[in-house]
Image (tube, rainbow, N blue to C red; front, top):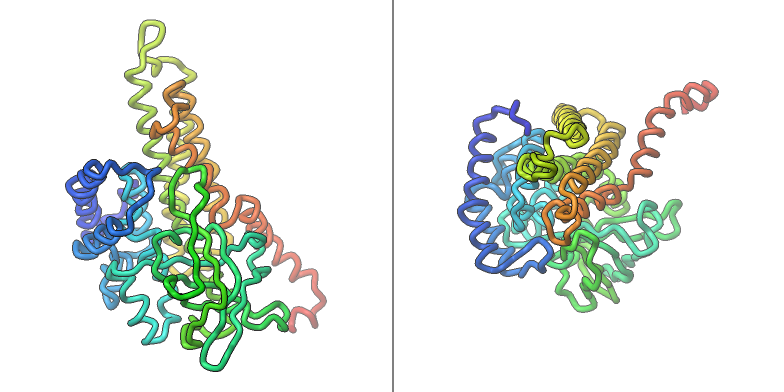
Length: 401
């Protein structure tokens, strides 16, 4: 995947990550008996984060001025696809996808020097983990309807409310929490606040497990939690804008992970079709199996091409709103179809709980919900298509306004 990218720094990094997985992570997973559906001990994750940073991988996609290698978004996509395709239980922690540099990279420009030193530089070094806390029980796609509040009290903010299904919360040290700071405004003013999760009044729970079986999501409760007003991140009232500034690239960067998972399921299907024998020969000789494999290969190539082109546009500074939504929609649905065909080809093996193909099927189904459902992506695409027509239909005075 992404073999057209020939930057020597990327080529070296890809090879180094493969060695790290094969020589260090897989033996660690075997030693601990750690599977993808087991809880990850925090002390183990910290060791992985710090080791990855020492090897130059953890912050590879950040600018050199922040300790990274300056890899661009196309190159980040290549790394994420490789990691997802590796099948390693701890692969997501090599780049810190669940709480490290990718979570904060494009928002660092909003941080004050004090915030960089206290919160974000430790994240870059693998010493702390963070999570982005926006979703609430009643507020999923409708992000502006959040109820968590941060009320000024002298030099402090007092936070009350709760966040739901927050990825990375079980092992995060602090959260970037979206709070209503002015409920009288229309719409209510939302601010991002940095909140240490060991403060009095903060409770983190993970009493549910998603269908992927991974213990990576949790709820965060805030009961009269006091933080300095200096912890407002990106300026008061700018939280929703800050959150939306990361969402387009974030949607795009989910796509190579889906591609890697689906590619692994496809490769497993090719191998299985060649060795599974029925009616006197391998099932790969049946046209029904051949057509499924052909459809899978075509879908994966389309997904890879779409991701690569969208990432190139992102690197060029293009407006990604429509294209990132289209990419997320197309890749999530096509990769799930690939996983579905992989289950079909594997037969009873493919529906056996815990088999890699069965696990991939469950993981890929969830991506049609994460970071905006397929329906939300379609809304975004339709809005981008129709906005020019709506503007043309407006009277000239309204257009000037």
